[in-house]
Length: 266
Image (tube, rainbow, N blue to C red):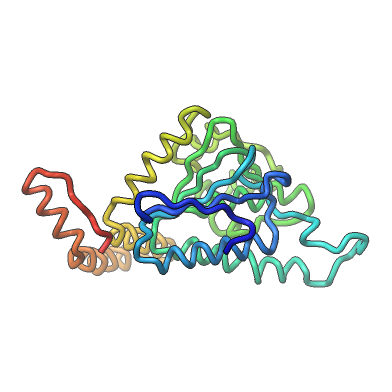
């Protein structure tokens, strides 16, 4: 079904992992791969069996950013007048929207370099697990562009204005450990531990009360624009919605009965 992705399914369908599968280009993004990834996230979002989604890369890189050969007609110095805008609007923006609005946790498994749009592809996910040899670089300025793939929205919020400017202006590479210290990465593992430790976390996410996680994502997203009063009111509304789920009842019963909860994601 997907020509640019390698899909793995685990835990009876609760977890789906999409691997960017163009290792010869360090998984550079093309229009087909962006469309495939958007469709994959949309499909997972609509599939009630899926409880957790992950994105990774085959080979030695997570993603090297936009494939320039795919974007431009070679020999045309000025390119089409609005080709960049078309790629951003028609391919990147829909993917960003699908990932950030997904009702399931979306985890980036960064197995190697994540550069430009590849770095932002990881950072717009709900959290990042990275191998210690990986690095992140906002390389847009190196070719005279600005951060896209949600970069101008998320980077200042993740890093603050000064550091966002510094990394965007210079294109400096951040190691996985540096990225963790700045709050861009949740966990860093060595190469031997990366796969098993990441899978442990993904298995846990696949068995969590998914409806509550969806509502948590919604509350965090709206906090960017809400006053404290508005956010407190939203918390009350969403907490009531969470309390009406089957998973809440199961969680309370499991606590009272001193057993492990068996969440269904409902």
